[in-house]
Amino acid sequence: MKVVLLADVKGTGKKNDIVEVSDGFARNMLFKKKLAKPATNEEVNSLRIKREAENFHRQEELKRLMAIAKELNGKEVVCVVKCGENGKLFGSVTNDDVASALKKLGYEIDKRKISFDTIKQLGVYTAEIKLIADVPCKIRLRVVDK
Image 1: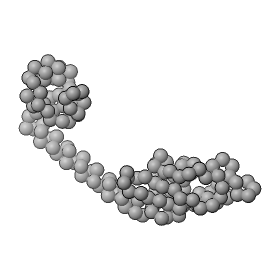
Image 2: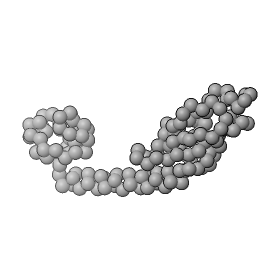
Image 3: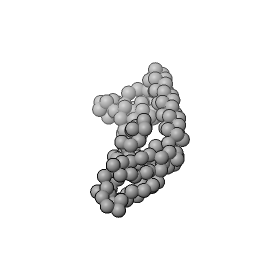
Image 4: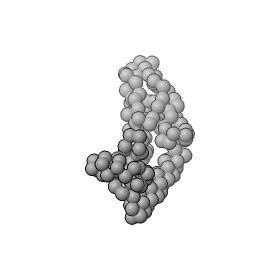
């Protein structure tokens, strides 16, 4: 019997998969626990349409992130911090500081996607933003005193 899984079932499949299972397993376990429903033509078609829509939205999001990465690559971001004598910072520059500096430029970037070495002096540094796994985006980070 073909069924559409409504949740992940260990040893059978993942949510929204169409799988072939025995009649007894479907009736006695999957249907009773509401883990699956019969794979009718309507269910299969609605699942196909749903997958196509998800693929379309994923592709659109990927295009948007690629455009942002291309726009940001090589851009200089100024981070204003408080420092003492000889350009030594009180504390260090954090991902949150860089994210807020990017926000002032009009880019909503999650601070967890920004990475750079520890910065404890004034100067120019390189930071990497990982919007997409295989697309590197490097910005110049200028740390200046208030």
